[in-house]
Each structure stands twice: as C-alpha cells, then as structure tokens.
Image (cartoon, rainbow, N blue to C red; front, side):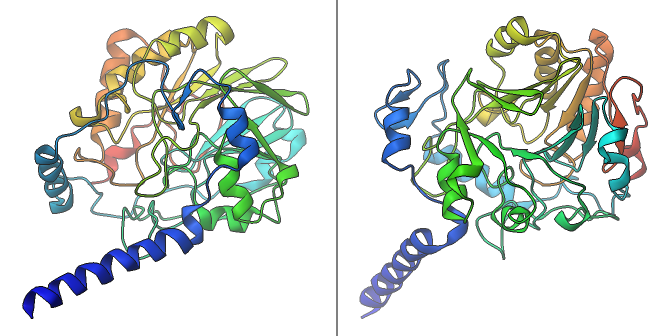
Length: 370
C-alpha cells in the first residue's frame, strides 16, 4: 500500500508539472513551421537545435549537479545585500527626443537598459517583475531597491530588443505591460514565437539571425553571435536563438552583449563593427562549472578590448542572486582588472541617466551597502 501511495504521489507530481509546462503562458511557445524552415537553412541549427559557433560543453555530471544545487540553495556568503540599495528615480523628461540626440544610457540593474540614440529610445532585455523565474512564488527574487523601476515610469519607447529568452532577460509580466506602449520588437529567431503567444502581433516583431540587420529610423540594429544557450522549459534548451546587438547610429555606436561566455567572436565583432563608444557586457552569475557560457569579470574586460570599445559598462549583476559568488564580487573583480589593463569603465548608480561622451560616473556606490 505504501508503494502504491508513493507511486501515486510521484505520478500526480509528474502530471501536474506536465500540465503546468503545457499551459502556463509565461513558458512561451515553440517555433512555427515558417520559423523552423528559416532555422533549417542556418549553419548553426543542427538536428532541431541552435548551436554555438564554437565548441561549448554544457554537460555536468549528476554527481556534481547535486552538489552545485545544494550549494546554491543553502545561500549565504554575502550573495544578497543586507539592506535596500539606494537607486535613482527615472527622470522621463530627460529622455525627451530633443534632449538626447547624443548617446545616453540608463541601467536598471542586471541587464535591463534604456538606450537613447539620435532621438530613439531602445529598451533592452526589460525585466521589471519580482522574480527571474517561471514561477511567481519561487526562484531568484530581485534585490530591494529604494526606487524600483516599473513600466509606468518609462518615457516613450520606440523599440524593445531582446538578447535571448531566459527569464532574467525576457519577462512575461513586463511584456504584458509594455504591449500598449511598444509596437516594435527586435529579437533573435524563435523568440518571436513567445511574443506572439503573449499577444504581440507578428507585424510588430522583427526576428533576426546572426549578422542580419534591421533599420529603426536612422539606427541600424545588427544581431551578432554570443556563446550561450536558450530555453524556458525543462526540455527545450537551444530551441530559440541567442545573440547580442550592435546599435549603430550615424555618429555613435553601442554594443549590448546579452549573455555570453568568452570567445573569439568578440574580436570578430570588433573588427567588423568597432570601435564602439560603449559596450554593455555581462559580468555576473559566473561559476567555474559553467565558465563556457558566462564570462568571468576579467574576461569581460578582455571582451571590451576585443570589441574595440572606448568605454565598458558592466551589467548582469546587482539585481538577482543567480550564482554562488557574493553580490559585489563581479564589480570588484572587474574594476580591478580594468585598472590593470587601463580599460575605461563607467559604473553608474542604478537608475542614473548618463551621457556616454561626458559622464564616467565612477562612484563606487556598491561600497555603501553590505
């Protein structure tokens, strides 16, 4: 009888999970026939999956995986701030078209950026929900900010760009709130399936593959490679494309890196599209166990050099606990290495509008918090 009860409970759990992953809207959708037909023509789509253009090993033995999960879930070690991080309220008026013909950047923590260039406002990887998770009740919860950002506080947004479909970069709740405000989305191939399932018209979505470009008024957006992966469910890894973005105006250029392990693709992008006025590159959520898909902070500095960027803005830290390192360690390691290699960095307080040509914003604001 005990065995029957246990098996019944296991079956119930498996069934519940199956129902959840097949019905929960935040999971998204699979590519349609048209998207699959396009993907099948690509060199980096093999046997129904997207692949990196350099060998990338993501296998982890079950024995090691268990230890990593235990270490992550036990927490501690300064992985989250003990107090509220003082952030700046967004000044929407500062983003009025006539005031930002020059390149301006606002960082909202992690990888969410507001980029103003030649009168155009571009929102990158918008995540304003409480968790970077498929669940509303569990998963990495955002740190406490004194001025948490919301969609309602945004200025006019001309377009959204997405780097890939992981939950800390593509948030169902945020997209739902953006729907009446934004009517142009630029995404890697396959990510549009999620957006369409969430009610975004196909006509408002431009899907690109690596090295393809699209126009946004006078701005050219180029989707460029990264070394990463994708997937929002338990069994759909590599099901949509991942990428980075070159944002090229008539006078200035920016690079938004999304997520990536270090690879020679940065040098290729730099040679093809550099020099950049600023590169926004990931510097957190790293670990030796997944070093091929997330850069160590020192590698982030080298990537900026490879890209021929005049300025480095470290992102992908300061908002979620996604690894085992202390929350301040990424910026500490990065600024140390940047100093050694004489790489100019900009480290603005979260929510602060900076003008790329004039604001270095080198206050070490993180030192004020435990």
